Length: 268
Image (cartoon, rainbow, N blue to C red; front, side, top):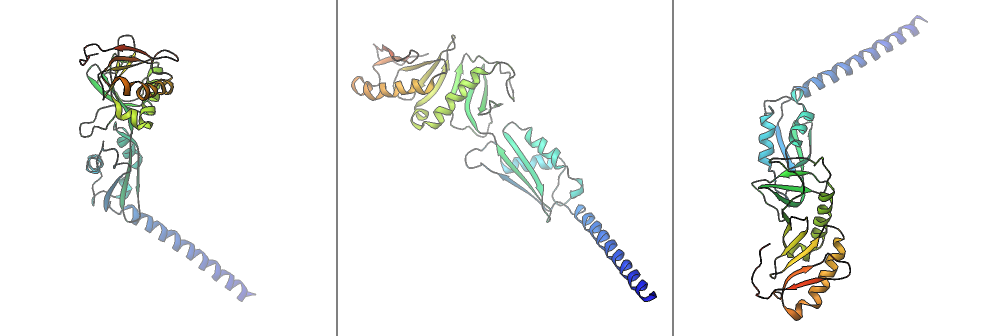
């Protein structure tokens, strides 16, 4: 009986010792990992082949400016959530993700905003993405985009960044137009500029010919370009590119054209 009690006691002591060992070992490991310095800062920009608003060196500068120094900053000192908030506050950064591995490598992944339209409003230029997010032009990169200028019916102060709080129906319509142009390669290449006149009429300036294409309000875009395609296919080969001054697509089931008598370039 005494021997049995002794064996049970020894097992209990041994089990307790093993538990204490693993807890102590785990604590030491965690403390050791926390005291590990950041060994390297790695920046991954997912869409850098298409969009170059930000560079790896710029992101590293932001990381360093926020007190994260390679070889000096310890893991326990990192606030990755704060770092992501700082990075996300940059205009062209859509979302960032920061994480660290067991070797102490801090990886920062960046997804940039993809603009679909450039808006020139009272001397201030802005990009707009599919979510209607607007941000100022970036100096080091200028993507090929449709440019909208003229009487922009949206108030955009210098340096504006974010979504317009006022009625954004016009921006939604312009987004649909921009997405259409992006999808249709021919019309995208054909479009030099989109101009908004004093009545809110959208006028497309083509890269070929001296005419202006009057789209009207940015609605029924697909139907309007279908009519324009028919006009280009059936009429232009017979009349030539410089015969017409304007091609008006505003009216249902018809195209209204004005003849260019002097064949001179026309200003809007």
